[in-house]
Image (cartoon, rainbow, N blue to C red; front, side, top):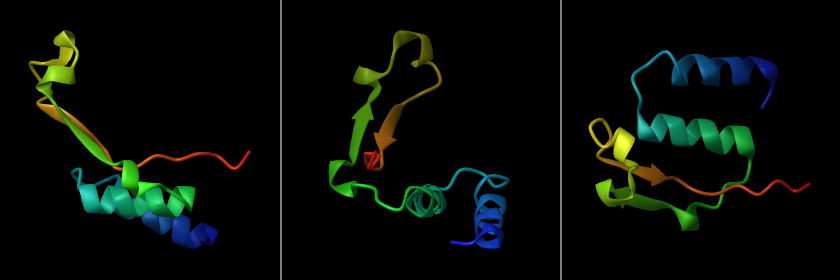
Length: 68
């Protein structure tokens, strides 16, 4: 990805309301290799008490390990 493509990707990802597929596309292009086999979703049981009034759950779309 060249610099112009990277700027366009940031511009189309972040000014908009959150969209999982758009964010996934950004992460895949940013990190090059993401392990989506470790994707997982958690419900409110695992949300810290301080955030339970605002967060119903959270999700990991994958994991990344730096080659270095």
